[in-house]
Image (cartoon, rainbow, N blue to C red; front, side, top):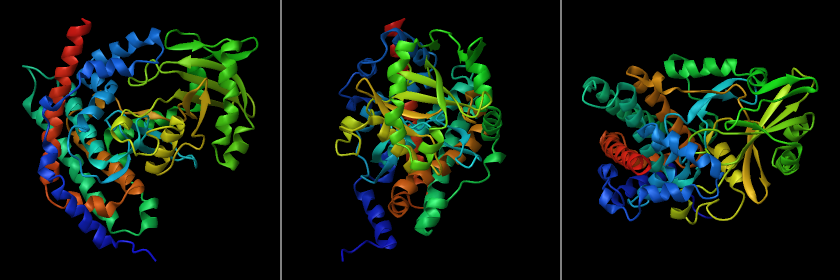
Length: 440
């Protein structure tokens, strides 16, 4: 029999990775390392998108440094690839930031709060997720207190404290999970969510965000029944001819579901299809909504069919699953299932006109964090919870013993991540200003 390393041996392997990248060296950022123009990378990422909506994506990125950051994953992916990494690999979210966590309904109907956007997910170095989320904490802290001459220094310091608490929370839970039975790691739930104000607010929104609420928000009654509203460019109802390939793709999507979930889906009939603009990073990608009805008009189901290009990290991780050929919607769905405690029961994938798509429920008890909720102490409390959720996702899809061995018990790793986050937040602001000058 092949020797399987013990937990102690794997922890030692994690400590040995410090020779590859010292923990204090995780704080390094140097723009002179760049061999690329960040704005050219953004422009390159627009290829293949809906041309009429590209301007809208730029507008959302120009709104603030955090808006730029959300839409510029290809820039950070290229920048992270310039730096040495630990080689400790697990599933990463790829776009871990403060707005990409939210509330949603589990298959059993309970409301959960977790990472909920996996468009960029891939197997990659674990620290890339921490660096991206930490940078977003700094940018969110600066935005909520107003960066500039009149800024409150105490509020700005809270952003730094939030990053340290984020990493400390991650480190503590990774250590705990590394000592647990494997099956208990799979079952582990993060508690105390209701006690964190931004999270409890998102859960309240999710409680109200029912399929019937979506029905009232997105559709209008006609003599022939309810149909999608027509509110271009953000929501546009498709003609019968335009809707045909979207509805045809449901057959392939159905096959990506578990058999019992295929059975439930088969009890719904499609009534209408629309095109919707969503998010910041996803603006100008093709995103369709299908309105279905089950047991009568009070039983709506809304499916989102979201185009998925390759992960921005794929060029730098050529051996990673999903980095090459294969359905990119499947990459996203399987990455989400790997990291989340529970996932949308209707999560699957399909193909339309040689483009790959993720399929999931739209707004089924979903609620998101608003940036204004992350002021002061709210940012620190939220950061702690982010650390726990990210640690759980990494442990579920990787090796908690390796991770625990590398991050250790002290403050070195957290101090380095903070140093990087502040430097990269400065870089993001500089890139944002350059984009404003170029598109002014």
